[in-house]
Amino acid sequence: MVKVLNGQKAVFKANGAEWNKGRIYHILMDRRYIGEKSYPQIIATDTFQKANGLKDSKRVDKRPIIAEAEFLKGKVFCGKCGSRYIRIIDTDKKERWVCSDGCRLGRRPTDEKLLTMIQTMIAKVNEKPELLLQHTLEAGYTRTLEIMRLTNEIARMNEQVAPSFNTGKTLLYQIAANKFSACKEDKSVYTDYVANEIHNTVERGGVDVQFLRNAIYKIFVTGKNEYEVVFINGARISNKEVADGASKTCNKDRSESVAD
Ligand SMILES: [Zn+2]
Image 1 (cartoon, rainbow, N blue to C red):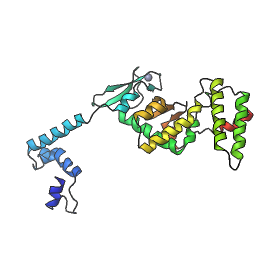
Image 2: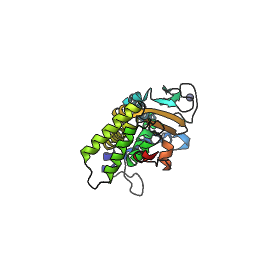
Image 3: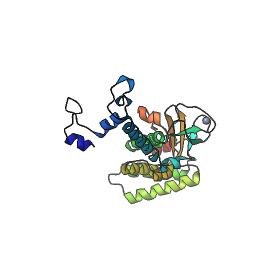
Image 4: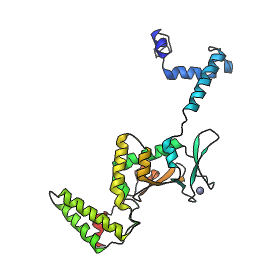
């Protein structure tokens, strides 16, 4: 239809603007063209209604259950009371997430809202992977002498002009193993893994089920447009913090805090 109108050199506007999909859509949806609000009728009422009916039926078809949103079930929690967030069909026919205990924390997020939030956050974290070190320290482990020795060794290696990759790798694995046995709850050893997952997901072009499964532990709704994402390494990052650029990144380098 756009081609036909432009081919006929039909005038859309005196300034020579061409026809496009959006302009035709606008006319077909604007009730003024069927003579409402004292405008002259340009489009036959039944044509108008057919176009509207078509649009509405298309919109219904366009609402498949998004796999990603399905996957979020059980991962979204209320930041106020800790209850699980559930997905309901709201009065506007959109899927929205609500606290199962009834808390109201601003507007109920849609699937799209949640996924866009995650997408925005991982784009930031991809630029600044050090954000993943946030809030993971408290989770900590009892620092054993062996961990201290290995950490020191890595620090010395880093000062070398040409450190050996393989030796470094072996040391890192040893540290990881030691941290694990020192404290089963320390998830910080997953930080590199999460950083890598985020990087790959951003490269792939967006949040998908694979990413949600592999890297995200929980999501908290903490306020109006405020969320906290907990990654599987224990890093808990707020979307507000990331957006403000005022993130309280942990300055204390983990590998340097050997002396304490
Ligand atoms: Zn709640």
